[in-house]
Length: 183
Image (cartoon, rainbow, N blue to C red; front, side, top):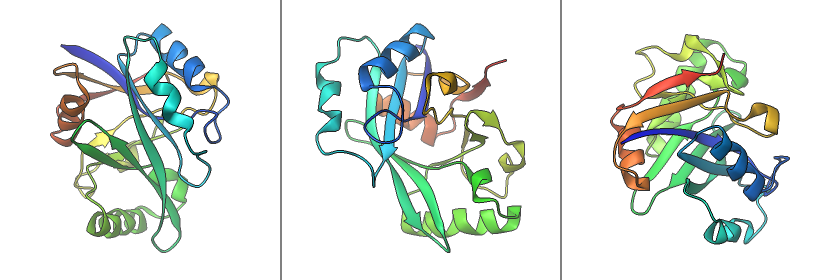
C-alpha cells in the first residue's frame, strides 16, 4: 500500500500552535496517511497524548518525543513509538550551525548512545542537501518539523508498505521510502 507521512510534528502539547485534533485534521486534508506527534520532552504536559486514543480518524497517529540530548551541546533526537518497534531520528542537523565534519561527529556520538535509525535532511521542511552524504551512514528523511499550520506539509516521506505502525518504522529503518517536498 502506498503511504504518505510526516515524522516530526509539534502540537500545543509543547510549542506548536495547533491542538492534536487540529493537527490531524490539517494533515488528513493534505492527504497524509500517518503523522508522528513529537513534542519536546521538556515541555510535554503529562497526559497530553491521551487525546490520540479518542480521535476519529483514518490516519495512523504515532506518538513520540523530541528528546533533548547533550552531546557537546544540545541537540534533538525524535523517538517515535510503534506497536513493538521504536524509531530514533537525529533531527535538523543544519540547526546545529556547525561545520559538516562536526555534525558528522555528533551524529556518530549519538549513535553510540541511542539506536539511531535515520537523520533528517531538512530544516523546518526545507531541504538541506549537504547532509545527504554517505559519511552520515543512516537513511536520510525529509520532515517538516511543523509547529504552525504554515509549516504543515512542506516535506514528507512516502513508501509502499503495510498500513501499520511497525511496518512504517521498518520501512524507514530499511531505507525503503523516498523523500518529497512541496513546491
